[in-house]
Image (cartoon, rainbow, N blue to C red):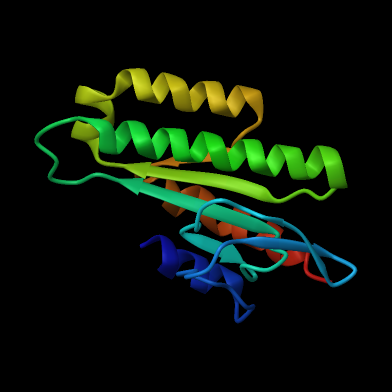
Length: 150
């Protein structure tokens, strides 16, 4: 659903819906930073993205454990790398997190939801979209990304 909504809102602009490479930011055609993990998507490209996003959907999980904890920690790491890039190089990359799966987050993982709110307040993610919120919020986000393409 996320990829389909982004594709419609991007209106033909380039977008990498399944990066199979690490996100890299360059300056004067020289790599400045390569992030430690692959993102779930990058707009317009995995090289010099305007925005990157992560999707954490844990459907049909009947147990709760380290996979969710690892996912939250990975988002924190990504946010710290993006913050360091902004501080050291003055380059901003927007960072979004999209989560879904009621049982995982609301029944078992409320403490991890609190951690995600902490990441928002610390500026490690620009926005978190929860569940159906992708339908109302994601198109306007993608439109704003498209406006930044020169």
